[in-house]
Amino acid sequence: MACENQQTLASPVEFNGIGVHSGEESRLTIRPAPSGTGLVFRRMDLEGHPEVPALLDQVVETELGTTLGNRDEVRVRTVEHVLAALAGHFVDNAVLELDGVEPPILDGSFQVYADAIRKAGLEDQGVPAEVVRVASTLEAEGTQGATYVAVPDERFRISATIDFSHPRIGRQYGAFMVEPDRFAEDLAPARTFGFRADADALQAKGLALGASLDNTIVIDGDDVMNGGLRFPDEFLRHKVGDLVGDLALLGGRFQGHVIAERPSHNGNVALARAIGEHHDRIKHSRVIDIRRIMDHLHHRYPMLLVDRVLEFEAGKRIVGLKNVTINEPFFMGHFPDHPVMPGVLIIEAMGQVGGLLLMDLVEDPDEKVVYFMALDNVKWRRPVVPGDQIIFELELTQFRRNVCRMRGTGTVDGKIVAEAELMAGIVDR
Image 1 (cartoon, rainbow, N blue to C red):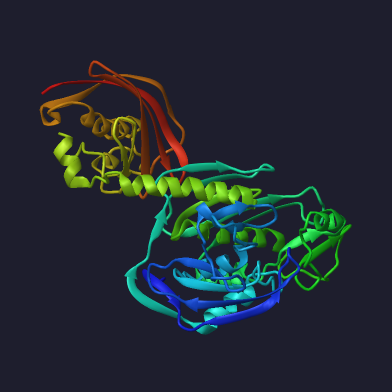
Image 2 (cartoon, rainbow, N blue to C red; image 1 turned 180 degrees about the vertical axis):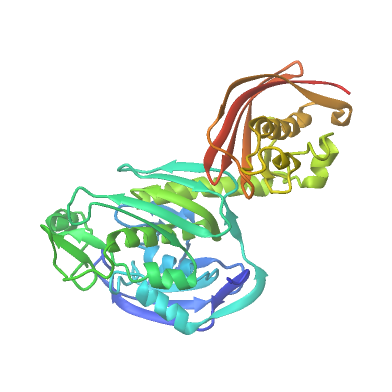
C-alpha cells in the first residue's frame, strides 16, 4: 500500500556521468526537501545556484527529451529519466542539485536512479500528498500521430502502443501499473534507443552528442548493435517510462488510467497540460455530495440516481456519477439471471445530473422543478451491470426563458455507454 503522505528521500544520493544530448560531464545530487517543496532542479554550476521547478509551466522544449527553463533562460535538459524514477517511487519532495546542463544518462534506463532511491529509503513527512486525479474522460494529441485518452482509475495505470515502420521494432502494446515495486521491475531497466542512420543528422543539430552503446540501444539495419534486449518490448517500456517522467511535471501524484498511442514527449506534455487544467477546474469548482444533491433534487429512493457531482461550472457543464450495485431494486426484474441496468434509467440518471446544473440558473431554485420535454439522438452503446460506475458529463448548449438544451454522455471506464440530447423546462412546483 502506497504511503498517502508526502515523502522525501531519507538520505542524499549522487550520480556522475555524461549527458546524452549535451555530451558534457555532469554530477547530480538528489537531496531530501521539506514537505511542499515539490521537485526542484538547482544549477550548482551557475552563479547564484538558480532553481528550475519541475513543473509544466517550465517546459521549453520537447525534441527527443523534455527540457525545462526559467525566466532567466536557465535550462535543464532531458529531465524525464530522473523524474520518472522519483515519480515511480512516490517521491514528492526533493532538490536535484545539478552541476551541468543535463542529468547523467547513466546506462540509458531509469534503473540506476531507481535503485539508488530504493537504497536511500523514503521518509514519511506526515502531510497528505497532492493527488492529481482524472474525474472524467480526457483526450490529447501530440506530434507524429501521438494520441491519448485518460480515464478515471483508483491507481496509476498506463496502456500504451508504439508503432515504428522499422521491422526491428514494429507495433508493440503493453499495460503497466505505476507503483514502486512494479516500476522497478517492469519499467526501470528499459533503455532509450535510436537508429544509427540518424546519428549524423542529430549530432549536427546538437543532439545525441553523448549517445553511445553504453547508454543507448542502437539499431543498425535489422540488428541491435548492443547485442540483446532486456525485454522483447524494451522499446515500448522505455516510452512508457518517459511518459511517467513527463507526468511528474503535474506537481502531484497522478491517479488515473492513460491509454497512449505512439507517445512522444510533445504529446506527453500536451496530455499533462490537459490533466492539469482538468485538475484545476475540479479544485475550484463545487463538488456536491449526496446531502446537497438531495437538497436540490426532489427524487428519493428508489428513483434518486445520482450519488455525487464531481465537477460543476455554473451555466456551462456538470460531471456526476452513479454507482451501480446489485442492490438496485430494478435488478430484481431486469433481469434476475442477467442483471442489466434499464436504458431508460440510464437516461433518467443523466437527466437528474443535468437538472442539478439548471438549478443554478434560476432564482429560488427550491421552489422550482425540472421537467424534461424532449430527447433526441439517444443511443445506448453498451450494457451497464452491477459494479459499474457511470460518469455523466452534460454541457449546456442553450438556455432561454427557462427552457434549455443539453448534450450528455455516460461513460464506464472511459467507454461511452449512452448519449443523448435533452430539452427541459424549469417550472414552479
